[in-house]
Structure formats: C-alpha cells, structure tokens
Length: 358
Image (cartoon, rainbow, N blue to C red; front, side, top):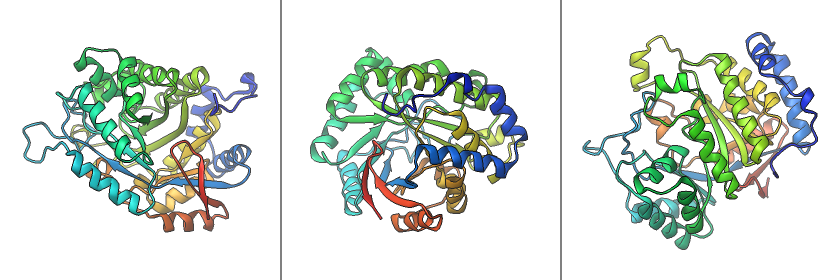
C-alpha cells in the first residue's frame, strides 16, 4: 500500500458529516489554509509535479449514450471512427517528439470490439513504444469487454496487463451514487461495479486513479459519499495513485437540454470542494488540479487549496473540449505557474516518480 498515508488515528479522521458542513459553511480562505497545511505535511519539499502525455481516444463510437457527454457517436454516424494502428502510431510519434512519457488511452464503449482487438492494440503499442506508459481503459470499458467477450473482469485485466497495460484511469466514476447515475447515465455501470473493477485491478497489482465529475444533479452529501467510497477502497487496497476532480462542462450535451437550470460551477465551488477533498482523502498522497476545466489561473490557485500535481500538458484532449472547455497549456507554462507560487516544478511519470526537476 505504497500510496497510503499510514500511521493515522482513524478516530481523528474527518467524518462525512464534518466534510458536508465544511463544504457548505466553511470560510474559503480558511479551507485553503487547512488544505495547504495538509499538502505540506504530505509534500514537505514543495514539489509540484506534472506529466507530459496525450489523450488518445481510439474510438468515439459508444452505445452508453451518457447525457453529459458531447463526444460520443453511434456506429452509423458520418463522423464515427475507430483509429487505425498507423494513426495511433503517428500520435505517439508526435508525443515522443515533445518528451512525452504516457498516453491516456480510452474511447467510447464500442459495441463490437472484443478482448482480442484490445490485446492486439496494447501489444502493438507496447512492443513498438516500450518507453511509453499505457494508462488506459476505464472501468466501464473493462466491464463491457468482459461481457461481450464472455470472460471475467479479472481475465480482461490480466490479459491486457500481460500485453503492456500499466494502469487504468478513473474515468466513468462521475458521482459514485446510483441515484445520480440513473439520471445522467442510465446505461452506465453502477457504483459498486465501478468500485469492484478498480478493486480487482488493484489486487492484480494494477494501479489506478480515482476521479469525480461534479456539477450535474448531485447533492453535497452525494459528493462526500463518493469520497467516502473511494477512501474506503483505498483503505482496503492502497491502489489509487491520485484523486482528480473536475466540473461538468455542459455545452452541446443532452443533460443541459433536459436540465436547463444546471449552472456552470463557480471557481469558489471548485476550490471549496478541492480543499475539503484534500482534508477528507487522508489516504491519497496525490491530488490533481483540473486546469483543463478551470483554466490556468484557477488551476494554479488549486495548488494553494491542496493540489500537488498540475496533471497533464494534454497534447490532445477531445472529450471535455467537445463539451465546451478549450483550455490548453504546455510544459513551459506549467513550470512558470508552479514557480510563480514558490513551488518546485518537476516532470513525473505515471507512477508519480520524478523524471526531471526545473
């Protein structure tokens, strides 16, 4: 359990009720100070990390039809695609040219692709580009590959890991609450299945990240319930490397049409949730700033509210941008933002190991 922050007294742990109260009633500056102090305990060298990577969405074809997603297409749509291996190679070559080390690899949940296709794909990338870490396939993709291939989730994970899959992202968590999920993504796997895919991955030695998308129809209590679920799983397995949170981007989505009163989430709300997550998730060493949805200024501010990682330079991003978020940043900009706060920038890999300091 290398990622766990051990030696804590569970009786002193922040409760769900305390977290809800802080979110709803806490002073923003005080929350920031508390979260920064906790961050300093965990990262006393004041190192803020980032990774140079690229999101590669191997297909936009998806049968799940999440109402909050503007990226997916159906098989017969004119702009539906499955990338060829050659197209994927070109994207990786471009990433290597700027010093990239990781691909975040996921797609829509394609209704017809089986385990053998994914094995061939992962093996191709891992063989041709052994220096690239494959951080790929969300819990719902893994669950569906198992179902359509008529094998277990453990077998999917084992076979892909054997071919070169290094870790899995936390995508598809949204809010880990079945009431919310039934509204915003009724075809998606439920909370317990998402958690169990990650549990199974962790027990096979495959690390993952935990994510949350807030700002749809959830309550504050349901947000904290999400944190409680991933904190409990982290207690059990220690397999989460980081927590990443972002706000719902509503442009071009069916959910915004169905719920026109859904409002764009404020920077105050984002920083407030981030700070309390840093205090509540006491067994997560790393928390990432979501500059992609918040912009570079609030992304930088997040470093004063508990985040110790700026995430990815994100050479390519298609899913969030399809819903209206168009922020971008390169390595030099990240270094400057970190140094402006008197922190020490460092390039990391997927495992949060330092590759280079600046």
